[in-house]
Image (cartoon, rainbow, N blue to C red):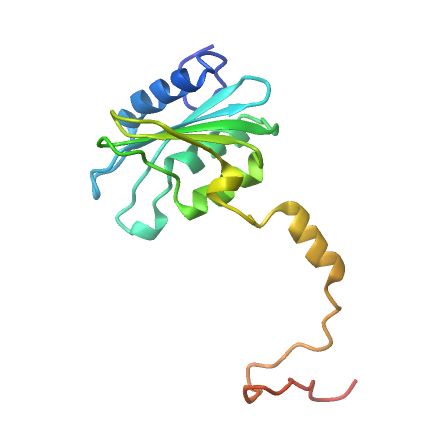
Length: 175
């Protein structure tokens, strides 16, 4: 296998190996604005691994986290299997834990995944994603809500005045 971020890699799947790779790959991050480099490695149930780095944008909101880049690389490669581990390494000594959006994305692909968070040096903190994100919004929860939701009665018009607090909106117009 070649050494590219868009192809699965099947090596170094131990927690220590994943952390070592995440620390190494963070050097490829594009972080000209914050200067904070993050690398991530995702391990699937079959042993395939995918790497990602943070990619900043001058419009900060458009920045992509390393964890999401690695998961996107997994999807782009066609892998649709459960993620069992994610290693995340940031600059400095303190562990770099995933942000809330990344926790939600990791839970989507690996509801029982173990996250190994570390810095460029220093300790590694390992926790299951359900500990880092208790009560995650999951596909099962979405399906349960969709089945229980009542059918909408009528769409409100933008010209309709807002309902007073504590009152129900009543559909206007004919049937």
